[in-house]
Image (cartoon, rainbow, N blue to C red; front, side, top):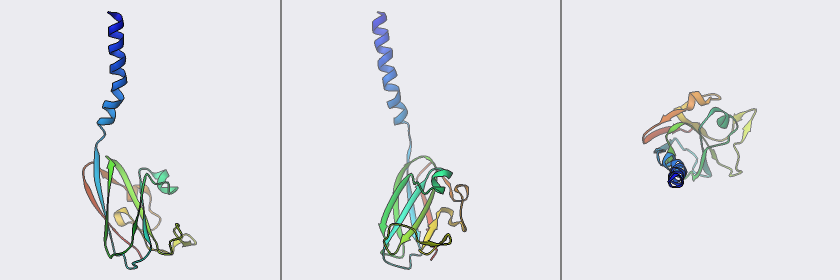
Length: 139
């Protein structure tokens, strides 16, 4: 009898992580990118989930799309949480954001359309249901 109870307890214990994983709620984030004036190269999009990853450009989710229109929408499915989006247009396709003295030489944008060297706090937003955000490229 004790053996059966122990086995049942062990099975329940092993199934518990599966139940926790199943409770993670995913939301759809639509990123509407506007003011794309140069129709060449790729838009390099980084989605960040905390301050340190934003500062080090270690994105949580990354996407690359052709910059072939004035407006582009990118859809990403993410777990509910707090995020920030940073992107740049890799016009010369060298896989990096070209800068001089820290100032971007290629078009770029961030969530909440903040200016300067934005922090995670200034660019972040809560994603707890499907959401649309709009980023206007700075040329």
